Amino acid sequence: MPYDDSPPPTRRARPLSVAAALAAVCLTAAGCGGGPEADGAGAASPRPGADAASSTAPTPTGQQPEPSGTASPSDSGSGSDSGSAKPLPKGPLTGRTVVIDPGHNPRNRDHTREINEKVDIGTGRKECDTTGTSTDDGYAEARFTLDVSHRLRTLLEAEGARVRLTHDADRPFGPCIDERARIGNEAKADAVVSMHADGSAVGNRGFHVILPAGVKGGGADTSKIVKSSADLGARIAGHFVRTTGSAPSNYVGGNTGLDTRNDLGGLNLSTVPKVFVECGNMRDPKDAALLTSASWRQKAAQGLADGITSYLKG
Image (tube, rainbow, N blue to C red; front, side, top):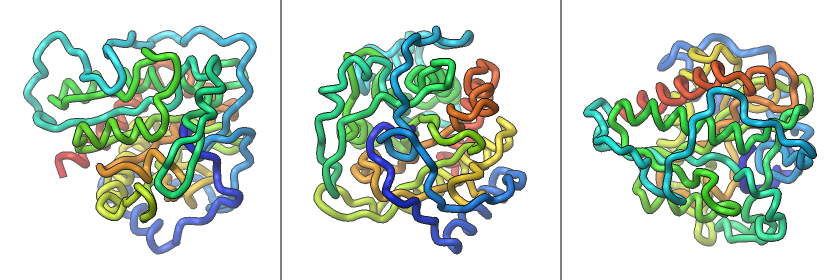
Protein backbone atom coordinates (compact mmCIF):
# COMPACT_ATOMS: atom_id res chain seq x y z
CA MET A 1 0.00 0.00 0.00
CA PRO A 2 1.39 3.34 -0.89
CA TYR A 3 3.04 5.02 1.99
CA ASP A 4 1.92 8.51 1.52
CA ASP A 5 -1.68 9.55 1.32
CA SER A 6 -5.25 8.77 2.25
CA PRO A 7 -7.42 7.39 -0.57
CA PRO A 8 -9.84 9.92 -2.04
CA PRO A 9 -13.41 9.68 -0.73
CA THR A 10 -14.56 8.20 -4.02
CA ARG A 11 -12.38 6.17 -6.35
CA ARG A 12 -12.65 7.79 -9.75
CA ALA A 13 -12.56 5.65 -12.82
CA ARG A 14 -9.71 6.17 -15.25
CA PRO A 15 -10.97 7.67 -18.53
CA LEU A 16 -11.79 4.66 -20.67
CA SER A 17 -9.97 5.89 -23.77
CA VAL A 18 -6.70 6.35 -21.89
CA ALA A 19 -7.11 3.08 -19.98
CA ALA A 20 -7.77 1.20 -23.19
CA ALA A 21 -4.73 2.71 -24.87
CA LEU A 22 -2.46 1.77 -21.99
CA ALA A 23 -3.95 -1.68 -21.79
CA ALA A 24 -3.16 -2.11 -25.47
CA VAL A 25 0.44 -1.13 -24.82
CA CYS A 26 0.55 -3.71 -22.03
CA LEU A 27 -0.89 -6.44 -24.18
CA THR A 28 1.21 -5.66 -27.23
CA ALA A 29 4.54 -4.94 -25.58
CA ALA A 30 4.54 -7.77 -23.08
CA GLY A 31 2.11 -10.43 -24.23
CA CYS A 32 -0.40 -9.96 -21.40
CA GLY A 33 -3.30 -12.33 -21.18
CA GLY A 34 -6.82 -11.19 -20.51
CA GLY A 35 -7.68 -9.93 -17.05
CA PRO A 36 -10.44 -11.11 -14.73
CA GLU A 37 -14.02 -10.09 -15.24
CA ALA A 38 -14.70 -6.54 -14.20
CA ASP A 39 -16.59 -6.01 -10.97
CA GLY A 40 -16.85 -2.24 -11.05
CA ALA A 41 -13.92 -0.45 -12.63
CA GLY A 42 -12.92 2.59 -10.64
CA ALA A 43 -15.10 1.70 -7.68
CA ALA A 44 -13.88 2.71 -4.26
CA SER A 45 -12.16 -0.21 -2.59
CA PRO A 46 -13.20 -0.74 1.03
CA ARG A 47 -9.94 -0.20 2.87
CA PRO A 48 -9.52 -0.11 6.61
CA GLY A 49 -6.83 2.55 6.89
CA ALA A 50 -5.47 5.88 5.80
CA ASP A 51 -2.78 5.08 3.27
CA ALA A 52 -2.79 5.89 -0.40
CA ALA A 53 -4.24 3.26 -2.70
CA SER A 54 -4.36 0.70 0.08
CA SER A 55 -5.01 0.31 3.75
CA THR A 56 -3.09 0.84 6.93
CA ALA A 57 -3.95 -2.25 8.91
CA PRO A 58 -3.90 -2.38 12.71
CA THR A 59 -0.46 -3.21 14.01
CA PRO A 60 -0.23 -6.99 14.42
CA THR A 61 0.24 -8.05 18.01
CA GLY A 62 2.65 -10.79 17.04
CA GLN A 63 4.71 -9.96 13.98
CA GLN A 64 5.62 -13.11 12.11
CA PRO A 65 9.22 -13.64 11.10
CA GLU A 66 10.11 -12.96 7.50
CA PRO A 67 9.21 -15.91 5.26
CA SER A 68 12.17 -17.82 3.90
CA GLY A 69 14.10 -16.46 0.96
CA THR A 70 14.54 -12.90 2.21
CA ALA A 71 17.71 -11.18 1.15
CA SER A 72 19.67 -9.31 3.78
CA PRO A 73 19.93 -5.52 3.59
CA SER A 74 23.13 -4.09 2.20
CA ASP A 75 22.49 -0.39 1.74
CA SER A 76 24.43 1.78 4.12
CA GLY A 77 21.87 4.56 4.37
CA SER A 78 18.81 6.28 3.00
CA GLY A 79 19.12 6.78 -0.70
CA SER A 80 22.58 5.23 -0.73
CA ASP A 81 24.12 3.37 -3.63
CA SER A 82 23.39 -0.33 -3.82
CA GLY A 83 26.55 -1.15 -1.91
CA SER A 84 27.86 -3.83 -4.26
CA ALA A 85 31.44 -4.77 -3.36
CA LYS A 86 32.26 -5.71 -6.95
CA PRO A 87 32.04 -3.48 -10.00
CA LEU A 88 28.72 -3.82 -11.78
CA PRO A 89 28.77 -6.08 -14.83
CA LYS A 90 28.40 -4.57 -18.26
CA GLY A 91 24.91 -5.11 -19.55
CA PRO A 92 21.92 -3.56 -21.30
CA LEU A 93 21.31 -1.22 -18.36
CA THR A 94 24.88 0.00 -17.94
CA GLY A 95 24.82 3.75 -17.32
CA ARG A 96 21.22 3.71 -16.14
CA THR A 97 20.06 4.56 -12.62
CA VAL A 98 17.01 2.95 -11.03
CA VAL A 99 15.65 3.96 -7.64
CA ILE A 100 13.60 1.39 -5.76
CA ASP A 101 11.35 2.74 -3.03
CA PRO A 102 10.29 0.03 -0.52
CA GLY A 103 6.94 1.20 0.81
CA HIS A 104 6.76 1.97 4.54
CA ASN A 105 9.34 1.03 7.15
CA PRO A 106 9.07 -1.94 9.54
CA ARG A 107 9.65 0.38 12.49
CA ASN A 108 7.08 3.01 11.55
CA ARG A 109 4.62 1.53 14.03
CA ASP A 110 7.00 2.45 16.86
CA HIS A 111 7.03 6.08 15.71
CA THR A 112 3.40 6.96 15.12
CA ARG A 113 3.82 10.54 16.29
CA GLU A 114 6.62 11.21 13.84
CA ILE A 115 4.98 9.56 10.84
CA ASN A 116 1.72 11.40 11.50
CA GLU A 117 3.46 14.75 11.07
CA LYS A 118 2.24 16.30 7.83
CA VAL A 119 4.51 17.30 4.97
CA ASP A 120 3.97 19.30 1.80
CA ILE A 121 3.05 17.25 -1.28
CA GLY A 122 2.73 20.24 -3.60
CA THR A 123 -1.05 20.28 -3.72
CA GLY A 124 -1.65 20.05 0.02
CA ARG A 125 -0.29 18.37 3.12
CA LYS A 126 -0.29 14.68 3.99
CA GLU A 127 1.13 12.45 6.70
CA CYS A 128 4.87 11.79 6.54
CA ASP A 129 4.32 8.03 6.17
CA THR A 130 2.08 5.21 7.44
CA THR A 131 2.62 1.78 8.93
CA GLY A 132 1.35 -0.17 5.94
CA THR A 133 -0.91 -3.19 6.01
CA SER A 134 -0.27 -6.88 6.72
CA THR A 135 -1.68 -10.31 6.06
CA ASP A 136 -4.10 -11.77 8.59
CA ASP A 137 -1.18 -13.85 9.88
CA GLY A 138 0.88 -10.74 10.56
CA TYR A 139 3.30 -10.65 7.61
CA ALA A 140 3.86 -6.91 7.28
CA GLU A 141 3.74 -5.05 4.02
CA ALA A 142 6.95 -3.26 5.01
CA ARG A 143 8.73 -6.63 5.21
CA PHE A 144 7.28 -7.70 1.88
CA THR A 145 8.37 -4.52 0.11
CA LEU A 146 11.94 -4.81 1.40
CA ASP A 147 12.20 -8.44 0.34
CA VAL A 148 10.98 -7.81 -3.20
CA SER A 149 13.13 -4.68 -3.42
CA HIS A 150 16.26 -6.65 -2.54
CA ARG A 151 15.43 -9.27 -5.14
CA LEU A 152 14.72 -6.61 -7.75
CA ARG A 153 17.96 -4.81 -6.98
CA THR A 154 19.96 -8.00 -7.55
CA LEU A 155 18.31 -8.61 -10.92
CA LEU A 156 18.79 -5.04 -12.14
CA GLU A 157 22.42 -4.91 -11.04
CA ALA A 158 23.05 -8.09 -13.00
CA GLU A 159 21.94 -6.11 -16.06
CA GLY A 160 24.43 -3.34 -15.27
CA ALA A 161 22.07 -0.82 -13.66
CA ARG A 162 23.10 1.39 -10.78
CA VAL A 163 20.43 0.80 -8.15
CA ARG A 164 19.57 2.91 -5.12
CA LEU A 165 17.04 2.22 -2.39
CA THR A 166 15.23 5.05 -0.63
CA HIS A 167 15.77 3.14 2.61
CA ASP A 168 16.71 -0.33 3.80
CA ALA A 169 15.10 -0.45 7.25
CA ASP A 170 18.21 1.39 8.38
CA ARG A 171 16.45 4.30 10.06
CA PRO A 172 13.93 4.62 12.89
CA PHE A 173 11.03 5.54 10.59
CA GLY A 174 10.22 6.82 7.14
CA PRO A 175 11.62 8.39 5.06
CA CYS A 176 8.75 10.80 4.65
CA ILE A 177 6.97 10.91 1.32
CA ASP A 178 8.59 14.16 0.22
CA GLU A 179 12.06 12.79 0.95
CA ARG A 180 11.29 9.59 -0.95
CA ALA A 181 10.44 11.64 -4.02
CA ARG A 182 13.50 13.84 -3.53
CA ILE A 183 15.85 10.84 -3.44
CA GLY A 184 14.74 9.79 -6.92
CA ASN A 185 14.90 13.34 -8.21
CA GLU A 186 18.39 14.00 -6.87
CA ALA A 187 19.62 10.70 -8.29
CA LYS A 188 18.32 11.81 -11.71
CA ALA A 189 16.88 8.33 -11.90
CA ASP A 190 15.89 6.92 -15.25
CA ALA A 191 13.05 5.11 -13.48
CA VAL A 192 11.65 4.93 -9.94
CA VAL A 193 9.43 2.12 -8.72
CA SER A 194 7.68 2.29 -5.36
CA MET A 195 6.93 -1.17 -3.98
CA HIS A 196 3.66 -1.95 -2.18
CA ALA A 197 0.96 -4.49 -1.43
CA ASP A 198 -2.65 -3.50 -0.98
CA GLY A 199 -4.97 -3.89 2.00
CA SER A 200 -8.42 -4.15 0.46
CA ALA A 201 -11.43 -6.41 1.10
CA VAL A 202 -11.49 -10.20 0.80
CA GLY A 203 -12.32 -11.14 -2.78
CA ASN A 204 -10.47 -8.16 -4.21
CA ARG A 205 -7.51 -9.73 -5.97
CA GLY A 206 -4.71 -8.99 -8.38
CA PHE A 207 -2.05 -6.35 -8.90
CA HIS A 208 -2.20 -2.82 -10.22
CA VAL A 209 0.29 -0.14 -11.17
CA ILE A 210 -0.43 3.44 -10.12
CA LEU A 211 0.52 6.17 -12.59
CA PRO A 212 0.90 9.91 -11.89
CA ALA A 213 -1.90 12.16 -13.07
CA GLY A 214 -1.26 15.58 -14.54
CA VAL A 215 -0.78 17.71 -11.44
CA LYS A 216 0.47 21.28 -11.17
CA GLY A 217 0.31 23.22 -7.96
CA GLY A 218 2.61 24.32 -5.17
CA GLY A 219 5.82 22.34 -5.57
CA ALA A 220 4.22 19.69 -7.78
CA ASP A 221 4.41 19.58 -11.57
CA THR A 222 4.12 16.20 -13.24
CA SER A 223 3.65 17.50 -16.78
CA LYS A 224 7.06 16.23 -17.92
CA ILE A 225 6.71 12.71 -16.51
CA VAL A 226 3.09 11.70 -17.16
CA LYS A 227 3.74 10.14 -20.56
CA SER A 228 7.01 8.41 -19.65
CA SER A 229 5.58 7.11 -16.38
CA ALA A 230 2.57 5.69 -18.23
CA ASP A 231 4.94 3.85 -20.57
CA LEU A 232 6.95 2.51 -17.62
CA GLY A 233 3.78 1.39 -15.83
CA ALA A 234 2.28 -0.33 -18.87
CA ARG A 235 5.46 -2.30 -19.51
CA ILE A 236 5.70 -3.36 -15.87
CA ALA A 237 2.05 -4.46 -15.89
CA GLY A 238 2.54 -6.54 -19.00
CA HIS A 239 5.63 -8.33 -17.79
CA PHE A 240 4.18 -8.81 -14.29
CA VAL A 241 1.22 -10.70 -15.75
CA ARG A 242 3.40 -12.89 -17.92
CA THR A 243 5.98 -13.74 -15.25
CA THR A 244 3.85 -14.16 -12.12
CA GLY A 245 0.64 -15.45 -13.67
CA SER A 246 -1.29 -13.00 -11.51
CA ALA A 247 -4.20 -11.21 -13.13
CA PRO A 248 -4.69 -7.45 -13.13
CA SER A 249 -6.76 -6.13 -10.25
CA ASN A 250 -10.44 -7.01 -10.32
CA TYR A 251 -11.32 -3.94 -8.24
CA VAL A 252 -9.11 -1.10 -9.50
CA GLY A 253 -8.28 0.00 -13.04
CA GLY A 254 -11.00 -1.68 -15.09
CA ASN A 255 -8.99 -4.87 -15.72
CA THR A 256 -6.04 -2.97 -17.22
CA GLY A 257 -3.80 -3.30 -14.17
CA LEU A 258 -3.33 0.47 -14.38
CA ASP A 259 -4.73 3.26 -12.22
CA THR A 260 -4.04 6.99 -12.28
CA ARG A 261 -3.91 9.03 -9.07
CA ASN A 262 -3.45 12.73 -8.33
CA ASP A 263 -3.35 12.48 -4.54
CA LEU A 264 -0.04 10.69 -3.94
CA GLY A 265 2.82 12.89 -2.84
CA GLY A 266 5.40 10.36 -3.97
CA LEU A 267 4.16 10.81 -7.54
CA ASN A 268 3.17 14.48 -7.38
CA LEU A 269 6.64 15.56 -6.28
CA SER A 270 8.59 13.36 -8.68
CA THR A 271 10.45 14.97 -11.56
CA VAL A 272 11.55 11.62 -13.01
CA PRO A 273 9.46 8.73 -14.38
CA LYS A 274 7.87 6.96 -11.44
CA VAL A 275 5.11 4.47 -10.63
CA PHE A 276 3.76 2.62 -7.62
CA VAL A 277 3.17 -1.13 -7.85
CA GLU A 278 0.55 -2.84 -5.68
CA CYS A 279 1.65 -6.46 -6.05
CA GLY A 280 -1.52 -7.98 -4.61
CA ASN A 281 -4.03 -7.71 -1.77
CA MET A 282 -2.61 -8.83 1.58
CA ARG A 283 -6.09 -9.06 3.11
CA ASP A 284 -7.32 -11.65 0.64
CA PRO A 285 -6.28 -15.21 1.61
CA LYS A 286 -5.51 -16.31 -1.95
CA ASP A 287 -3.38 -13.26 -2.71
CA ALA A 288 -1.76 -13.49 0.73
CA ALA A 289 -0.65 -17.04 -0.05
CA LEU A 290 1.24 -15.68 -3.05
CA LEU A 291 2.72 -12.67 -1.29
CA THR A 292 4.10 -14.83 1.53
CA SER A 293 5.70 -17.28 -0.90
CA ALA A 294 9.43 -16.72 -1.48
CA SER A 295 9.23 -18.33 -4.92
CA TRP A 296 6.36 -16.06 -5.96
CA ARG A 297 8.18 -12.99 -4.67
CA GLN A 298 11.10 -13.95 -6.89
CA LYS A 299 8.74 -14.14 -9.85
CA ALA A 300 7.34 -10.73 -8.91
CA ALA A 301 10.84 -9.25 -8.82
CA GLN A 302 11.61 -10.82 -12.20
CA GLY A 303 8.45 -9.40 -13.75
CA LEU A 304 9.27 -5.96 -12.39
CA ALA A 305 12.86 -6.18 -13.62
CA ASP A 306 11.72 -7.26 -17.08
CA GLY A 307 9.27 -4.37 -17.27
CA ILE A 308 11.85 -1.82 -16.15
CA THR A 309 14.43 -3.21 -18.58
CA SER A 310 11.93 -3.10 -21.44
CA TYR A 311 11.17 0.54 -20.64
CA LEU A 312 14.82 1.59 -20.34
CA LYS A 313 15.80 -0.18 -23.55
CA GLY A 314 12.90 1.49 -25.35
